[in-house]
Image: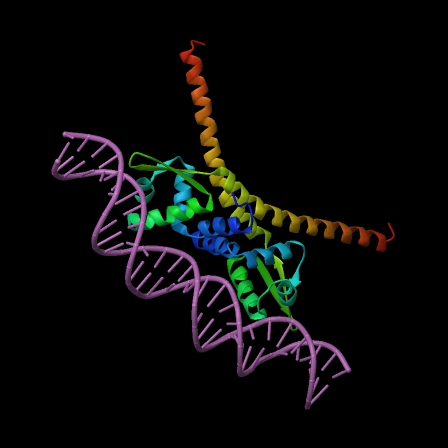
Length: 114
Length: 114
DNA sequence: GAAACACTGAAGCGATTACTTAACTATTGC
DNA sequence: GCAATAGTTAAGTAATCGCTTCAGTGTTTC
């Protein structure tokens, strides 16, 4: 696990493509083979494999080959990492706004002599 | 607001670059001018402006120009949209796993004659 | 063991990205 | 009004992306 900036690069890059998000969406409803992932997508199987490799390299998806079938599933820990990065920044900003609001309210009270 | 797949494309694409995440990180600690965003980054001001345009097009950052200074701030609603997409997929998968676990436990009980 | 199946890998190609430099436009301070 | 400041815009370039086709490689099925 890289766990650093490069890992986030790979994860967000992976999620930036609609075909790949479609695949994640599908996998969130249960494991699937490469062919099953490819079925609703308007592109060659080869293209799907390439997308899948991007997803796997990012850590968002784990795959395992049994016989001739590669079964794919979501890696929720990786999803949580991406989610967490965004959440931290958003909360940081929102808390800053809250503190500013509180400060302004307080200052106003004092100005009014309360 | 696009609110569709194209919007998510733009947001995740925007977050996929370390320089742009650095800028979002900086902005989560308070508004900043273009020059302030550029200061810690090892690239031309021009490059920073281009990154900023990507962030603004994605909706993650809002900017406003007063005089010659462009002030930038985070758009928490957009961050929440990206966060929400990931969260939904992860929860969906985790709940599936939970239900499967419950089903297996129940089946085991019945097999054991409880 | 031949045929069908489920992928896999390499090469190629047009579009997009992440920069650079250089020339430019407003605004502000003196 | 002249210089410094803050940012913008355009053009160019090397690298990467998202495909395609085509020629494989193992695996099952009959």
